[in-house]
Length: 449
Image (cartoon, rainbow, N blue to C red):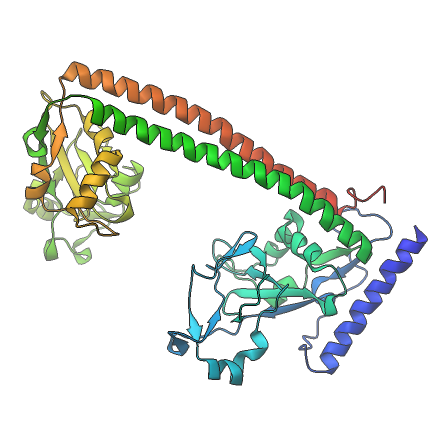
């Protein structure tokens, strides 16, 4: 044990000397950290482990904060938080560049090197990290940061796994001062990290690699099972609609259509703090009739009465990726009108049931029709009411509709229960990864070594 302790002590000395050398050669900015030693470890580790603050063992470099007027169509790409995924980098998710000459003059020292650990430092996805394992020329930018053990004296993948651990992220978030997560050198530098001998770091990495490879395969299989189950549900509904020999009607023969008001008839300047509700897309998308943001007074409501919402109406989202999301207005919904992003549907109750229409609208059959009527647009919008009225909708007898709805509910319930079990397995596997990480940095995976 004393031999291991000596090795750890030598590694700590090497880190301190490396930091001094880098500062002396002006390859590292001296931030004048005021760290107090010895570090108070957040958890117990083997006696031969040493504890250092991150800035005394690793480069911590923040991006420069490029401005839009500097962006070019080609040149040197810079990293954004969008490019950083959990464990990988997608260069295509955000493709922004600066001029090659400007890079050479001002930003070359922000170049990301192969093997660097890059991490997102702000926004809802802060803490995402990945190893930059590519020869691609890329630089840091705002809200991104890179880490790397000084002179590669430590095993950088050990440091990468540290960034994934709960204690690392919890320690980082404890230094946050604002409502919006936004971290930089001053936050990362204060994080204490356990330093075992280099050979033990490599052993920990090898053990984690093997364990996570198995877990990640299991996670991928479960996620594929969930996708397959959703695919089965979608195919089943299509099959029920397409193969059933039901009579079809023009949609306008079984439903009354009202598209929300256009133009300047409903401006934000007209909204009040209370009064009659103005329903938005989120009511259709999330079936949420409580979270209302906009209201109009009685005079404006009377002026726009033809857009009034009543119990039992169907409200459908009319544009974008949420086109076709639909919900039924409940009895306790406040009195109000629809806005321009909604379509109000009132079914002929003697011919067609709300629930049958709702299932049809949310099916791939309808989505395919809308895509065709929208001219194949990537972000389709609901076509005009005149066109909608001519769309053919299957309309069996009410008893058959009820039977269809029961079949749909049965299939949907089975899929939902199956996916719930699969998601519970996912949660367990992800918790297992956290548990293994925790054991790794407590020295429990290498205790026999």
